[in-house]
Structure formats: structure tokens, C-alpha cells
Image (tube, rainbow, N blue to C red; front, side, top):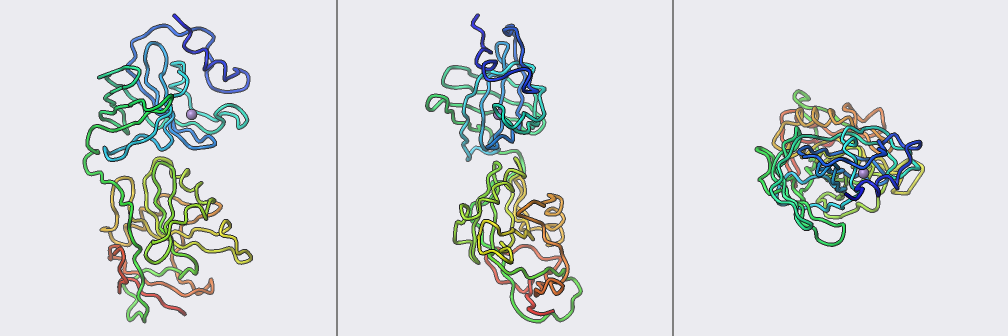
Length: 323
Ligand code: MN
């Protein structure tokens, strides 16, 4: 049989990469296993590999496997990989082919329903992803990856359009039942993160797409990996700079997390979920609670038991300029 791993071997040297580089041609086997590796290469992607005829037939999926049938994703076929690769996790040296961190995102078994040069239909049974998927070749190495089953129970598609909740101004009578946050000065921004990519909508009505104005925030998308989220916060410019690309995203709320809308949850519950994401990077942070007075800012008082009211100027949030 032809050596299916020749293209794989050609791209790698065993002495320069920790990846397996087998010397022998693969033996034919009855494959039923799959693996999905999250690969933080120059561009984040997920490597979807199906064991077949002694190798791992592989696709690079830039935004990961879709979890609902409404979202189709591009999958680019890559060279067949050796079976040993299913166990590989680690750091590929930066200068080598595919340099970057690899983790095993999921693995399991699958059943083949169709397999031709143009169409591959499989039923996956993994820990994170299960269900029927089809790959359809569109052009050359490009395939379209589609989930045929409904989204897993309880999972909803994140809204593509949502407006921020706004604070009303006034005085706070009793502080009981309110949390206090600094009143950040800057540009209000909602960040939609899906498949490791971040889309930024700014303004009080989230009316402007400013994704490309803040390239430093794409790394926040990659940090969240396969987690789907909608974040709310303010883009705060560095004191000595007018450059947008040095602004920091101060995140204070969470509107959607991994297939679940969180707007119906209380402020306190949303904060707990937000803090569990541990967002802290060179250009983003989860804002601390507490008065803004120490920072020379006003404060926003937020009712702990209130839900998130998109597009509403609500008395549940009260802006106090000097506190
Ligand atoms: Mn890869």
C-alpha cells in the first residue's frame, strides 16, 4: 500500500519536535476512535482526527466543532497523522511547523455512516461532544462541517445582537441589597466570543462593530478557547495614550456562557460565573467590585438580585458621579 504518512513525515524532524514521527508505514486497522486537539498555533484551531485505515484522517477546524445545526463551520483537510498522535499534547517549538500549545479537547469513539471522497458522515460519542456530524467537501482541501443532530438538551445559540443594560442616574437611598462597582470612563463594549474569535460591538446601543479597532483583544478570544460567551464592559484608554490598541477592556458582566443565556440570572450569580472565567490578561481584566472613589471615579450601584435588562435604562443600576 502507499505510505500514507509520507506527507506527515516530510514536514517534521524527530529531533526538533516532541510530536511522534514513526519510521514505519502504518498497518491497516479497523478504526473507531476520534480525537479533537485544541491547537494554539499562530491561528487557534481545533484538529479533528478520525482513525481510519491505520492513520488519523485529519481536518483543521478554525472555530471548532459546531454544537448546533444552525452553525456550519469550515474544516480544512490536513495530512493524515499517525495513530500515536491521538495521545499527543504538549508544546511544539515556535519555529517548527504548527508551533504552539496542543491540548486534547476531547476523544472518544465513532461510527461511520458514510465515507467517500466528498462526504463523511459519522456519529461521535465523546465526553464533550456527541452526535451526528457530516463533512462535505466544497473545494480542494476545504470541507464544510455540519452538526445534523439538534443542539444538546438545554443548550441555546448565543444571540448575535444584544444591547447593553444602562444605568439610571440619581441617588441611592439605602445601600442594602446593592453591590458597588467603579464607574469606568471609556467606551461601552459587548464582546461576543465564539470559536476562539472575538467580535466587539460598542456604544450604548451596541450599534458599532469595532472588532478591528482593538486587535489586542483577539487574544482574549483565544484564551476562552471553545467557550462561547458574551461579555459586557468598558474599553478604558491608557492615561498617556490615545491609541485604541493600548486600551484595556474592563469586564463587569456576563450575558451568555457556553450555550446558556445568563441575562435571567441575578447580578450576584452572573458575577460568580464571570469571576470563574478568571479573565486577566495584558489588555483585559475582570473589574473589582467596590467604590470607584479611590480611583478618582464615580460608582455604579447594582441591585444584587436584579437580572440583566438588555437595552433598558434601569433603576436596578444607579450611577453616582461622586461617592
Ligand atoms: Mn493543528
